[in-house]
Length: 89
Image 1 (cartoon, rainbow, N blue to C red):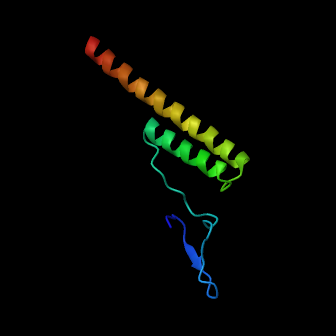
Image 2: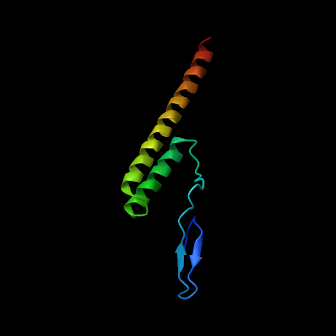
Image 3: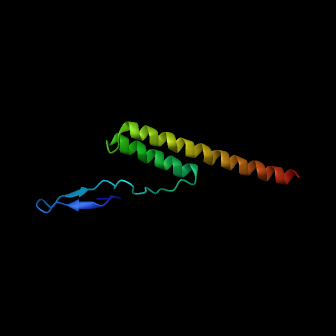
């Protein structure tokens, strides 16, 4: 059973149940590149399709990830322009 969350074992049945993350716990994932953002979007999509998270919450998360992606894209373009401007001096 692959699970990123803590689990609880029922003392009577022996079944393993995943515990949801505690409120206030920080979720960490790498979002340094567009590939990272794409991977996280796919994860949110799969979790929504599997009914692990509410589709409305998934929509909000994907919207935020799109914003992060745009910032990464703009930052990369800004760096490229600076490099080209330095070369032309």
